[in-house]
Length: 325
Image 1 (cartoon, rainbow, N blue to C red):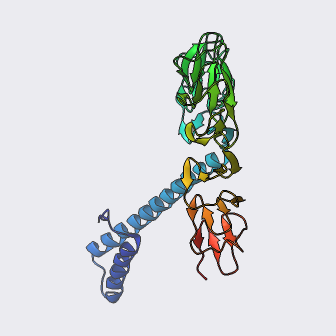
Image 2: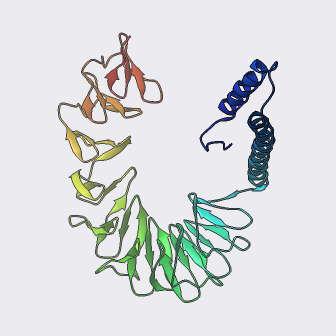
Image 3: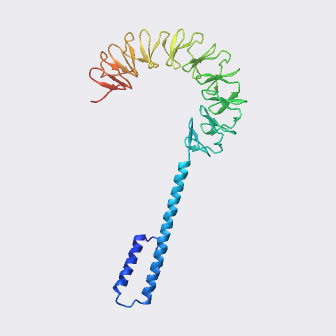
C-alpha cells in the first residue's frame, strides 16, 4: 500500500476507517489472508506517516526558534548620517557596505565615515582618500594629509579652507561646492552670507557672478537680499533701487512698491504694507499669501495665527485658502 504525495493526513485516516469498517462487516466471517496483510500494512504505514509528520513539525519549529534567537541576538546601532552597524557589517540607509570593517568603522559627519582602511561618502568609497589621516571639516568638506575633498571628490591640496556657504579657497583659487570660480581673487574673497560672496572686483551668488552688483559697496542684508549703492538684489537678481528693505518672509519694499522675492506685487501699498508671519502680509486694503492676493480675506480684521492658519471676522484660512466650515 502506498500513500500518494498529495494525500493529506485526514484523507489517509479516512482510508483507515473504511478498511476497518470492511473488517467489522466481516467479523462473523473468517478473515482471509489478503485482508490480514492489508491490516498489518496499514498499521505499519500509519506509524511511519505519523512519526514522519511529527519529525517535520519538530524540525520546522527548531528552525523558526533558531531564526528568532538569531534575530533577538542581533543588535544594529545607528551611527548617524544614515550609517549603522552590527557586530559584523556596516550599512548605509539599510544597504550593506561591502569591504567595510564594522569593528573600526565610525561616522565623521557631513556624509563621511571611515574604518581603518577606507573612507566612505554617503556609502560610496572615496578612492583617493587616506583613511589614516582623513578628517571631516564642515559644509561637506574633508581632508587627508594630501588632498581636500568636497562631496566625496578630490578638489585641491590639503590647504583648502572652508569659508562658509559652500565656498572654500586655497592660496590661489576660490571654489563653490568644489568647482573653481573663474576670475575670483583668493586673496580678497570673503563670504558675506545668504549665498553671497565677493572679492575686490566682483560679487557672487552661489558661485555665479552678479553682473549688476558693485563689489566696493555691496552688502548682504537678510533672507536672500543684498544691496549696493544703486540697487537691491534678491538671490542674485536686481529687483529695485538701493532703498529696498527686507521685511521678512520673502517680502521687501521700497518707498513706492512691495515685492515678494524678486517679483513686484501689483496694487500693494508700500506705505501701509506689513508682514504678519507664515507667508501672510497685508496693507490697509488687501491680504496677501506668498505674494498672491487672498480675495476672500478682510484686511481690517485679518490676523495670522500659526502653522499656516489665519483668520478674519468671517473666515478661517489655511495657506491662503478658506477653510470650509
